[in-house]
Length: 573
Image (cartoon, rainbow, N blue to C red; front, side, top):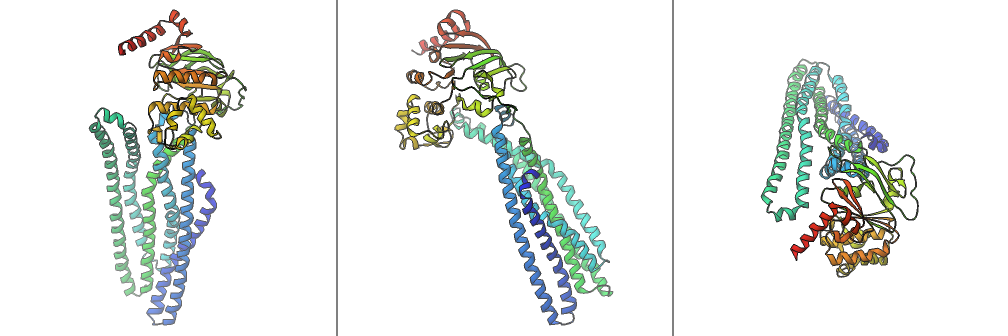
């Protein structure tokens, strides 16, 4: 956290000085009050009372001004640190490869950048407002109390350690519960996110009761942990009040005896009692902070875990520029295994896709088709072998250079909250409306976009939930076309389209992709039947390459796929 507070060192230094001024002013007030009692009230000296009262008023104004200014600076520093910390976590997550995102999971990344950052920000603010003044108040209060009367100082030596000991014992039991509480927040977020995202599946399978039970389990665990923490916190304040009140009674009891013996005056007794209360108050403030610090420490550790996690996909030290013009894609003996997996998803995959050609990848479910497409733009790095773009290993080129050459249409196309135009301009922020309409025409999306109330300015909901699956796919294809990349990667991007729309789209794509490299992952043979080069995958390995006619002669796996789809079509007919 020091790194994120460093820009606010000047404000924090001024804050400490203001807290020092305010605390000194606060410590001076009981002494002035005691003098008014002893030298003004007891002697009937109205002039002294007015003079000393004026000084008290002036000191109080200084204390108020210093406290307000310190609180303002503390709030600005804490809010600024929270803003920077959220931006830092967001930037780090943005650099993660798909591997790190999968390892953490979206729910915990969201809660770490919201709930956890808020916990840390709150502690920084409370620390600036309270923790800085607490030790000054404690040390100053002890000194001022000893100045008033040394004979009662043993009360301070008893009350302060007793309060600190009792509260520390409670706090030690709270720390594990705070860790469980943050983990419970992650669980609640995960269950809620799954239910909101998959609400249609839940309703389709009539699983509302089951999902309610899942959420109830997560919510019950969070509630139980929060109640355990609440019970421990509820013990703190009674302990503090008992010690406060017992200390007040002890001061009055033993102080009255000293006043009766002429060892101290009434004003000194009043001042001493005020100083003892200030000392105990500072201990209570430190205690209050101590209750917040454990939870913030857990949150800070969770944030630091994200910030300290380096992406497995890193920028090269000496980047090699990719060649201009047509960009080929080559995989040489590629192997890839997910972390912790016993068997690689891809094994010894080699293929070459040239500009002006369409290379299709087909295979059964789980054969590694989408994974193969993911290693080309370095969403994952291969565990063995190499992926070359224009003859350059993608690990030797900058990520920006690699990504700028590739237009990816993922298996599950995602649209962002905004408009049709804003989503299409993700491919090129400077694209004109004419270019957007041309991309929509090629993607067979022009008709339904023109039928929308506002055309290109029509609203798109988060994830594109207000358009159909086929419309979402076509908008994602149009977005890739707007980017005008050197390499198109279509990951089963035509699965939601009917056969006629699929055929029209592929025909419209041919003139646009005449000089680009096109790699298509498909389930339907009809989608890739005219491809220049077809690669058949089975269990992560290449079992056949060639054109459609060649594979019918040489690849049993491809023949099996073709016959299974033909049988399905005949059955449907």
